Amino acid sequence: MRGKLLPGRFIFVLCISSFLAGSLFTGRTWTAHPSPDTDGQMPTAQDCDHKRKLVEEESGDMAAEVTKTHQAIKSLDRTMSKLETDLAVARAGQLDGRASEHSASSSNLSLAKAFVVVGINTAFSSKRRRDSLRRTWLPRGEKLKKLEKEKGVVVRFVIGHTATPGGGLDRAIDAEDARHHDFLRLDHVEGYHRLSSKTRLYFSTAASIWDADFYVKVDDDVHLNLGMLVSTLAMHRSKPRIYIGCMKSGPVLSLKDEKYHEPEFWKFGEEGNKYFRHATGQLYAISKDLASYISTNSPILHRYANEDVSVGAWFIGLEIEHVDERSMCCGTPPDCAAKAEAGNVCVASFDWSCSGVCKSVERMEKIHGLCGEGDGALWDFHLLTPEDEFAATSLIMLDAICGVRGLI
Image (cartoon, one colour):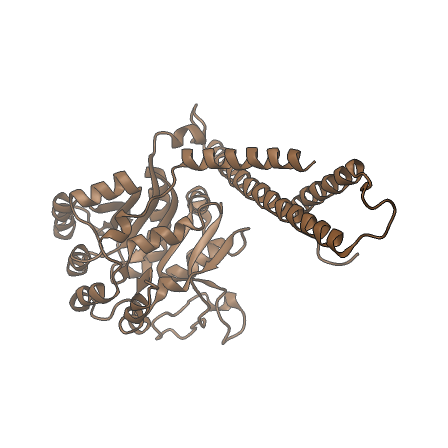
């Protein structure tokens, strides 16, 4: 009586399974007739083998039908979660006096559709890093547009402005963007110690421009295989609230002269304690619902000194799934090269000692040659559209219903 309560979804699936099993049992019992051949005699070994095969076949059919029904329930759960998120956004807009005549769902119709938005965090001093990515894993020009149009993959360098907008550094970014068209400009004053604010604003801004399934943050000194990233995220597409990355739990540094000093160290307990589990800041992805959550609650989301800790803190108390995806934090050669040779291409590679690729400008092309997925990996990947997913779900539900009727 004092044990842990079972989740409601588990009870629901268990009820459906019990109903189907009960229907099968009672149906078979009511329609059973005594075999005229036995004439009340003991069944032979052949009769037992025959009946055993019938039971095994019926059990297999029942398991298949239960699996299909469970898949349909997961798809419906994702749809309900989206509606709940849209309702929360609409309510927040009304409270802030920002509600319009259109609901949050209808406003999403005006947003550009995408599967994933990849934001590459960069700085004014990082032009050589950006160029090294354009020469390796980041498509340029028409290929970048084609990637967005045909695959739903949006990639942008994310940067704000200087404390005095319009200066030489800002004009240099304007000129670079006019040439490559691969920037997302934020209304944010750049600065290393303002990275938590920048990340929060990036997710809010990206969610207001693109209606995507996932939003990714990656640093500009990380080697990334876009095809592997897309295929990895696609495996989690049916999950409404998901936080994917290399989960870690580092020490809370209380000394002021340490690189990753946490001024609010006292909030994490006694000296020597560790942070809660969170994705390392070099690369991580969040689903649409979490990006909407950040956008809606942005004014009251607390910012710690370290950006990855801040993001983890925003999600720690939510009903979400943390996915520890180790292929998103492979080491540079020989680590990622050996894995690629074995057929296990990494999503991303960097050096932990440098919190990115050490000397990335000089080494990125070599790493790409040894650890890259190949030009065809991304373009050959085909992602189901929402319409295709809806049609597939409808077929699964219809097949499950017809199968249940046939079993009964």
